[in-house]
Length: 295
Image (cartoon, rainbow, N blue to C red; front, side):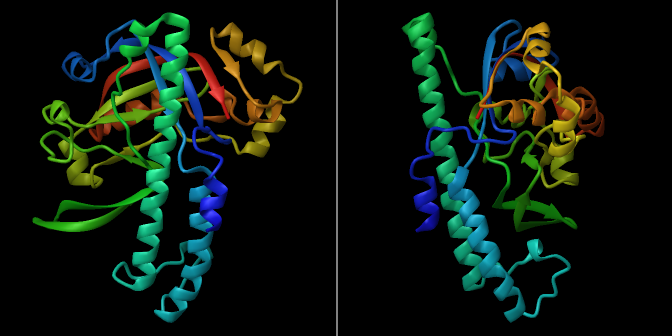
């Protein structure tokens, strides 16, 4: 009930932290075949939305941690950290959490759909109905999620509950879960960067299926804590610095601006190079930001 109450007024909102809406453009194409399947052409505009289940999901997590601490004790599970509290998947506690998590994921999908609808309306008002009708979703995916999947382990196909936190799914070619247009190339893998540099679209590989349960990173990752970023940004005109890079920012306040400044994150190109060279996902296109909206 508390989760529903917290989420009731938040559908269609980005939220704070690293959540964003980014208007950009395709700066470079690395894999012409995969890019064509995704509809990504050099010089065309793109829109990336990163947000999730908002207060609804946060409350689901809080409720689950409270319940699972007691559950772990009942099942005799020793915890090195309270945040690692857990219960067997086939227990009543485990099934209750999986159900609540699925509801939070559905909330997140609905949230992004509403934002996409609002963006489509804005595009229509500014550029005309034809431009709005031309918008097409390349891929919609959730991270920070546990899903039942089939993977090969020790030569045998097994059904596993795969939990990705700080990661995103990167299924390779041929997986039946993928839309038909992506089965030959592999799943689109979205890797956002920061507010000033670039983001990437990659495609999943069969090597990822063998080595990481079909997973890759879902972003560049922070190199500064939010506290350290605030200190580093003190006294700087970060909006002017952004304009000098050709990026227009819309943020709720100076604190968010400093916490999320580009230097607070690793260089996403170096991160993507590592993922690409490791064969976990391969580069398809690089996106450059034009307008970034932070919640």
